[in-house]
Image: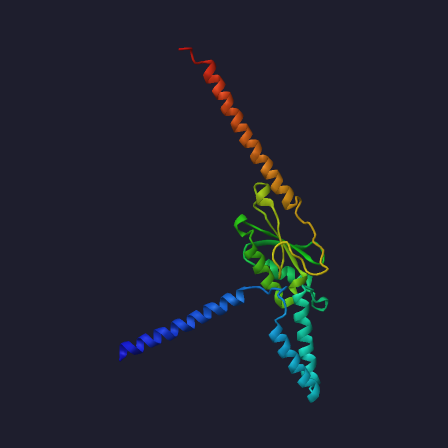
Length: 221
């Protein structure tokens, strides 16, 4: 009996722990925009709004209308101008993220942060910064640009840029795609390819020269 009780208790604790882990993981994910409106949820909301209108529930109707408008704007990637992130508070919040060394605003939408280690120049760090900004306003209007302060070459110096709520390369509706990095990714890739080709050609030439020297110094048999 005691063993059975212990087993049940252990199972309950494990379930609770798993739920806590799941909740923590969900909380760790920043907000995301661009998801299409769910037809079922939208239809149910419209039915509810009709009932509220017929019943005279103006407050409930207004709340649902605002929520529907907000969901629609997020589906088309339109940031809310009335909830613009406060720049100074955002700078302080981003500076609190582990690994971030300094933070400045380039313009009203582009936040530039420098991390102290190359290993921290990741989209995970971008996510961490965006989560810190979420209580301050609509992060769909913010693009985080991340650079390493410990860079030793051109590749490590490359800036990661991403809108807080969208995949890399995408921008919110009406949001300009400002090129913050000194070299565009396509040009950086081309330079890397050219350098690789030059190194291969140099190695091939060295091998050919080595073969010529060996042949010149090998007596005829």
